[in-house]
Image 1 (cartoon, rainbow, N blue to C red):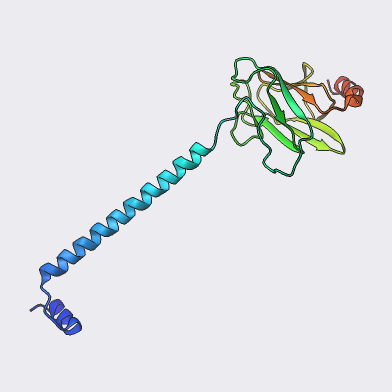
Image 2: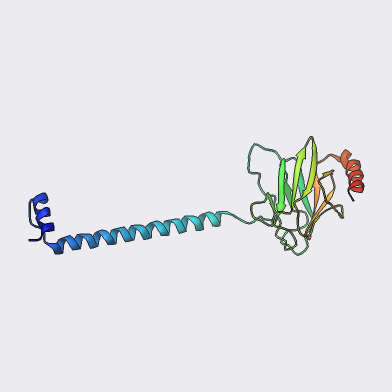
Length: 186
C-alpha cells in the first residue's frame, strides 16, 4: 500500500485503489473542461445576441432614447446621394446630437464621404448651433463650408458628405441671424 492510499484509507476508513482515484480525477477534469466550454459558448452567444440587437438606422425616424423627452425639431433628408436614406426621411433632434458614420452617433449616416464623427448639433439658449468635428470633407451650411460653430435657423440645409439635411424647428424668425453669421464666418 502506498503512502497516498494509506492516507486515504485512514481518512475514508476503507481501501481505495489508485485506479479509482485516477478515474475520479479524469472525470473531474472532463467536467471542468465541459464547464469551461459551456462558459465560452455562453459568452459568444451573448455577444452575438447583443450585436444582433443593434439594428442599423432605418429610413424611418429613429426613436428617442429617453421616452420622456419630446423632440426639439427634426432633420429631414433633402438629398441622400448614394446612401440608403430616402429624401423625406426624418430624424428627431435632442439637445445634443452627433452626426456621422459611426454606429454610436445619434444620427448615423451610411455615407462613405461622411466621417465617423462628422458634425454636432447643440441647442443653446434657444438656438441650434452646428459644429464641424474636424471632418475630412467638411460640413456645409446652405452650401457654404463652416469652420467654426454657427447658429442655425429653421429651414437651413446642412451638408454632411453626400447627404443634405434640412432643419425643421418651426421657428422661422431665426433665418436672418443665420444669413448674417454665415457671411461673417466665411
